[in-house]
Length: 269
Ligand code: ADE
Image 1 (cartoon, rainbow, N blue to C red):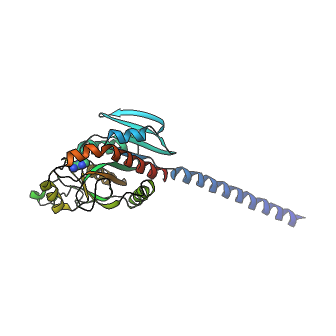
Image 2 (cartoon, rainbow, N blue to C red):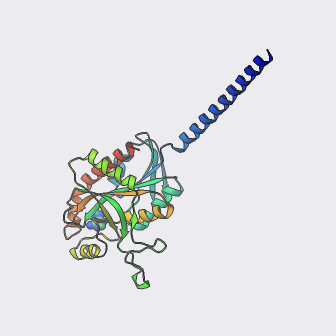
């Protein structure tokens, strides 16, 4: 009888331990679910048209205005996003990226918009996904730095995130299968490139597939904050003597194309 009692007691203790262990696991699972919840993505558009297209799709949107920029925070295809048009140029773009990180807590940034082609094989309407970005107008060479090398970073090259690159290329292939997509360097500077001479000078120093005015600044802020980024650009012109005309004509189509790619990319997160 005593022996039986002892066995029953042992059985009860074992069951209790198992119950507590399971409860612990469940708690851990709940914690890891919280940690692995979809991360908030910042989407910086250079064009109002493009931001507007995405903004209209955002649910529970809340608008906040800071430094002359409207940040639209909400849900796009069940994912947390903050969409913003940063305005033209590196100062606007860098400020915008830092605000997205500090004020809105985004954990990755997508930058889309138009760009001028730097490579004869890349035509108007094609898409460039960044492998890296450089700031072609940043010049500390008289102080012994390499062309475009940023102080404190040690290299001109700001590498894009491998997973975001992959999902951007997949998104182009899914949303616009007829369009050519190229992966390569994006060259950023505070100039609209509209002559063969300017274009040649950039290519001679940095190579690169396209030029634009924001991506490299966003890339710098992302690198300094250890936040992954990717730049997706639709080619609007060839950065030559016809660039202004071509840019004006192609903007709307480019905006639609970029918005579709970005949306597909977000839906896959
Ligand atoms: N964005 C679109 N085209 C551009 C160009 N030619 N130069 C700089 N930024 C651009």
